[in-house]
Amino acid sequence: MIVILKDQEKREQIDLLVEWLGKQGVSVQATEGAHRTILGLIGDTSHIDIDLLRALEIVEDVKRVQEPYKKANRKFHPKDTVVRIGDVEIGGDSFAVIAGPCSVESEAQLSAVAEAVKGAGAGLLRGGAFKPRTSPYAFQGLRAEGIRMLLEAKRRTGLPIVTELMDPSQIPLFEEVDVIQIGARNMQNFELLKEVGALRKPILLKRGLSSTLQEFVMSAEYIMAGGNEQVILCERGIRTFETATRNTLDLSAIPALRQMTHLPIIVDPSHATGYARFVAPMALAAVAAGANGLMIEVHNDPSAALCDGPQSLPPDAFSDLMKRVNAVRSALL
Image (cartoon, rainbow, N blue to C red):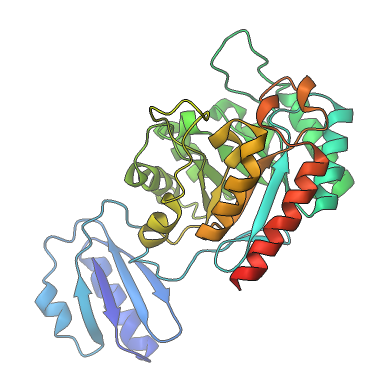
């Protein structure tokens, strides 16, 4: 349920209403806009008399919310959420690019890529230290050593780092990681979502391979219900019958999610398409569709990559893409 208050009501009246609602057994999330305040009621609101609320002098309207997600719901929070990572902002009118190798392979490899993506204009460095792989025989990542290398790259370049967490037991290793990624395979690992919900750092949540948008937002709700509201949604393609690309990039998810939630939305065209030649056109299309950012895989030697080489851009191609991204963004202003 949401309670829309009239413009410029006195703080004392609002506080009294919030106090009364709390006594009805619901928690209240207040969102103050430029011209009005919205109170989002979370919990069992079935016993609250809507007509009584509407009759209050300070109340403009009351609406029941049918969607099961509350904290992530745009109806509760009309203003876009902006997630801040150091000097980088994602959300609202802000735009950021996260770039780097699929997996951290060596000090030299990561250092070369980090310097290249920073020089091209990326705001954050990505790299997998723990890698979930379909085959048990594939490269699984350097684990703790990989995180150490990421932190060293951050020290050298100043770029905040993004890397994937696969299990709660790994959380102590992520203390200095700036953004924790929850991968597509773990989007509905609810115990893991609860654990990162207890953290106070940004979480980049990737859409599951076969998940609906409501399921996607509900996973974000799990994190937010734990008290962590710094969630970034990432569309990375879904599994369909099509085999020409690795996955099917659902660009319609961007405007659809924009109506559903206030959370920032970024797009990963690398995992979505699976081929470097498709990354640039899909990245540009995502920018035009209103994405708040991109996540691009970059490798200094894609042919020798230990993980996902075919979808990785070499540094010069990434630099060219960044120029085109900026051109599209300028055209949209």
